[in-house]
Length: 200
Image (cartoon, rainbow, N blue to C red; front, top):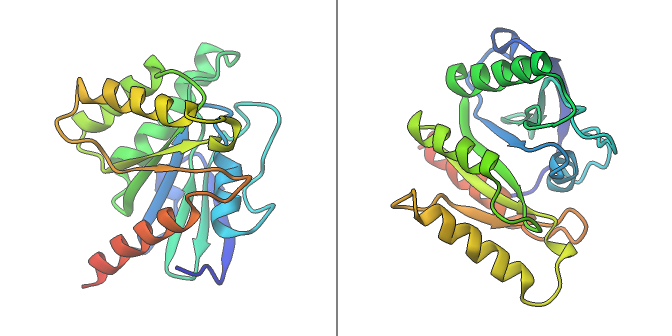
């Protein structure tokens, strides 16, 4: 898939104010500082489309970007930012849950996982919640360029083995790097194949 246009449409905290219409939406979510904005910018080849920040926990809004005038990338708030107070965490959780559970246009959720880390309890619990609610999702392992040799494969295998304890069938997964653009074609082709299936 070629991305010929990508434009920011709207930011808000209320799922009811998301764009009208029935264009498919592909949402991106992950723990704070997992590389979400960098991945969105890499996929769209637009450097400043999603704002990247050195401060984790900056995205507190649902951000819609219209791609090729026929589908959306949705940048969701990051979860699990430790330095945010309980009230802030609850607000973020409500924004995330309302969008994921109520937004009919959401076609697939890409859950970003830092490939450098061991399986994190917060991510595994979030996946369990997605499974319980029947939410279609895929995993994107980010920052793969930061690992040398066989460490990347070992980390991903240990993650998949952890998931197999809970899941009979593993969700689709992708390995990505915003630096080397690894995974870009695979993720975009996956989105395109879903879009084509919807339009058949």
